[in-house]
Image 1 (cartoon, rainbow, N blue to C red):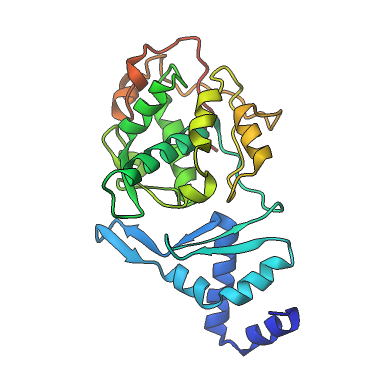
Image 2: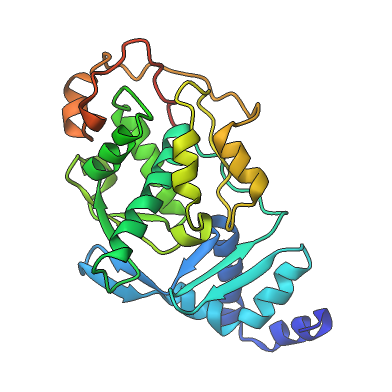
Length: 268
């Protein structure tokens, strides 16, 4: 669709339809992925996503709109995802904990899909995530509840993870859905290779979330360059996390906490 045709197409829409189209564009820019089906906590089941319907209805126009900025709009009909990718995209800088979660979630997703799963969505728990990280010896100290919630919130924003409980109610047995968007962020054996080389002593720096990580992004995950310094703040708990440690998460791999290990960063 040429630019002139796109403008003419937009002008033919009713005001309400224009508003929904604008919302679709903003949503793609905000969260990168739009899922065809999402879990609805109130009904306790997956439901068709009206945002996906609006985006799909005007997909040709949206593709032309983003093409001006060198951004591609992709659609995976098999898994029900519409997403954007391109070198001009700038996502959030994930803290180290969220980056580690992202890598482990890919492993869990692949393992379950290779077994008896008949759905594109996979279920996990916070305990399983931390046990996987413990197996790779990727952190020695239980992260604070604040940092856990921050990591989960960021992955939820990008439609990668969906906690079935409220964030303030998260605990080690809280179930979470891993959405198929994880396959677009990390392909093949990337996650396993990155986990094998991830240095626990590295600074607390993460990676930008965007679709289809290129080779440079993968190298950043293994050995992050000097990104923005987020600093370390005390979350008010002792090295064992005190009472909060028991309420959120499990100690990975049964390792004793390291009192010299710096805390994760506080959220804004």
